[in-house]
Length: 398
Image 1 (cartoon, rainbow, N blue to C red):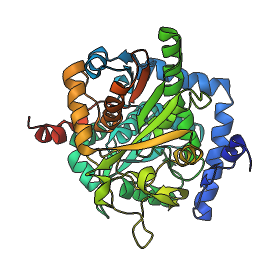
Image 2: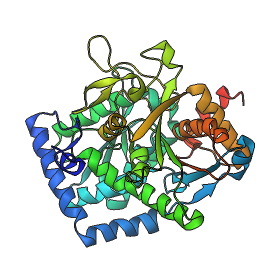
Image 3: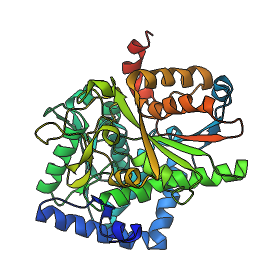
């Protein structure tokens, strides 16, 4: 396989991706891929999705210039792509609606999902209610406790939330449980929330999240007459980042930066962070090949992040590919740096970011002072921080 397009068609991004799954699941995934390819080729499907994004989600989301923070930093200009303003409060609804339409097309009546921070679970519960489907969301027991507001939202929307107590009781274990439930219940539709998993899920999620990048590109060109110098997004699995990056892949003058969670610090080793691309190596997790944080026995290692949506020991295969070819750069910031950025955005701009998004913001606040006055840095603010307040307030002494 030589070209990127050919590789993606075979379920790979360079050496990454694929589907390392039992034959029964491989057959289900093959069928999903065919339905997806057929759907996005039809005007009626794209028009229905676009109508929902406009009238239900509230797109296009705003592009906000942070003049106060830009002035404080004394360098470049900071813009935020405001996914926090979407219905349900994050980028997750874009993909949930798209996949729910695929489920409807396939005659499915039941949705299965995994969630870490609870935003994807909330989005899945939302679209299930909208389309008259049953919904079961698997969530690590630790995340159920620390993301209580989103658990309440899922339940009031009619979803059944299943707490997973295995392992660390966080996102990896939620994915394990959801995949197992899907294998046991092939009549359900597995609505995967990030750009991870066996093919064709990474391509499907990238397609439905590409609205982020296409809108950001169009709006910055309209307002400023040029492209940004750098685009930045947090990376756990990597759906919000790949959605933003998708519109700038062919623009070599635009730096693309993914920001991973350094947690307590990379120097403390496995279990202290979840910076997969910064500290991991190629391996297989959840049915696909990518960079993985592994222990001495080759199993996925324990991970940590103050942001529950980022504590995943793998990463989307397209990000692994972009790292290897040098088209995107991947850095990491600590819990403390993310918390500081969270507070600064609240106090300076009146915007409460999700802790996941605060990682991208923390990196931006580091590099803005080094940029020229006319340079533009665009951060994807992937979600709002209401869900994180119970965690954040004690840490900030409030």
